[in-house]
Image (cartoon, rainbow, N blue to C red; front, side, top):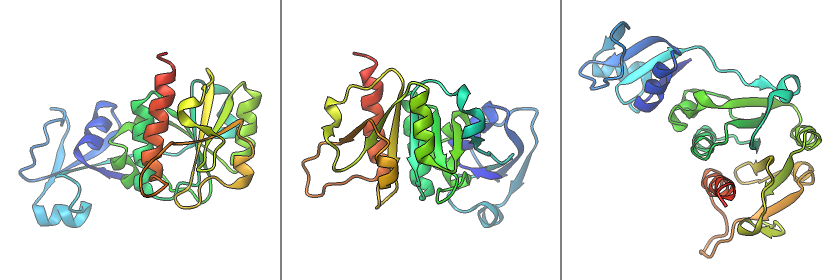
Length: 227
């Protein structure tokens, strides 16, 4: 997979994930290790190969594949984020970034109707994807039930939720479900939640972008550990 963007490539280099490095001539990217060769291209050639949003640097890494939830679920610990069919790669990456900022590194996604891990997701995550444990499952509802059997409480973000986010008492092992853009959490998944909550708002519209919602919810989840 070819990734691009300064923060994304710098993080991949820091973790030793980069197989090949590509720079635009004149690039001010300084994170290249002294012992690593980099292929350089003129501006037009670089942008033709890697796009005009690459910030002058790109790299080749191995494809990142999610772990199979059923096979590896026993290794899961800490808070969990469950994404029910997030299809926009920018939202997916931004959610991963927000999760990392607030200490959540375990993310469960659907195998189908879910944005795959691509360069766009990596860039939107600002490289935090490389620190995440992504699990995929063919059945989000069953995954929620499995987590409950492991001692987790399931919380669902829903515009019609019974509780307000500020009033939610998150458990020591919490799994938060976020729904897809436009459609929200599917009914069959929502019914698995122990608690459904909504974000209190007072504006002219009653909904946030899913990645904005994720940041608010994850900050609240993190803050609950500090009190």
